[in-house]
Structures are given as C-alpha cells and as structure tokens.
Length: 261
Image (spheres, rainbow, N blue to C red):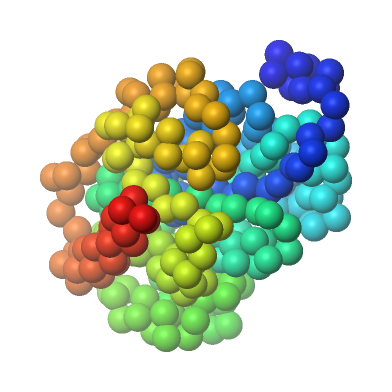
C-alpha cells in the first residue's frame, strides 16, 4: 500500500512498459513477482487482481491493459499470465518495448508441488487433452497438432498423478520453443528457479539489469528461503521422465548461452 501511495505522488514515468512473467505453474513465478514487487519502479499484478485478470485468471483485453499502463507511475507494469503463456509472442508484439521473464523449475519439484496442490486434476487435464477433439481446455489453445499427438502417446491407463503433472510441465514449457521465444534474447529472459533460490543476489542483479533498473536491496531476501530439491526422489513414468529430461537440457542450454553473452 505504501509503495502504490508513493507512486501516486510521482510524475508520470517517461516510459512505462509491460513485463510478462511466464512459465509452467508451480515453477516459482509467484516468488519472482514478490521479488519484483520489492522494487520501487514496478507495479505487480497477480492473477487474483481482478483489474488485470478476469474471474478465470485470464488476462483482461488489450484496451484494459493499455489503460493500466497509461495510469501507471513506474517503469514496469508486471503481469503473470500463466494461463495465457501460449500467447506470449503476441503479447510482446502488441505491447511496444515489452519484455518477458520465463521461469524454469526442475520438473520433479514442479510436478510434486502441483500434485500436492491440485491432486489428480493434472491427470484429468492431460487425459482430456489427449482424448477430446476438438478440445476446449485452455491448454489446447495454440497447441500444435504434432505436440498433441506426442502428448496422447504418453497418456496411458497406468499414468500416475505426479507423472501427469510432469507431463503438463513438459507441455507448457515446450511453448518456449514453439513460440520461438528463444529467438528473442533482447525481449525474453529465461531464469532457473533453482539459481534464483540459491544465488538470489546475483540472479536478481542480472534480472534488474535486463529491465534496466537499479538493484532492489530488499528483493533477494524474499527468495533466499525458497525450497529446492523436494522432488528429487520422485520416480516419474519413464517415458515422461525422458521427455522432461530432454526438454530441461535444451532449456538449460539456452539459459547458459544467455548468461555467457
């Protein structure tokens, strides 16, 4: 409340841009938003903010997003559109000077966290995606036919709930390449959740530099106690585990290349 009150006393920022924090659910995006919120030159919108998201946790239309940007008195307005991750490329195109941060978490940790929160809802979701044609689930939006075929081949009667959550992790994180976000290094920053949790000060310094902001002294304390490695003993369905491993390696290579640049 104090931060927003202080921002109201400022003159309008010379430039206010949109920042989208994306990734698979249970990957640390909320944690990152909390860290971003510690900076005085951001305004953060979680999915529960009904001015920025509707009752289904979907982004409000473009006109409403533009009004939010016009009224803001800060450098970055931050949205976390996890259910609209599949439109990240379009969001970057329609909002001038916008950027995105993609958060990647170990698939076992993310799957365990998702299963603990939602139980077999992940299993019902991937079965629906595999069986319905056409499918009206939000995860089917902009889903390539070949990707759906891959998913269907991995869904079988013996698939357990945690493996289904890992399969969903795989499906959502493939968007990074399906949307060609890896070809936009000036606009998209990929971040490992584990690096953020274990090396918060250095990782947040890189992140704020990407946003052309000075460091926020309090931000690293917010992420310093984040849990890492809770799912390391999780045994996933072998075929799902292999898909997740291959994708994670590919994403890690992109992150490593960005950090070397």
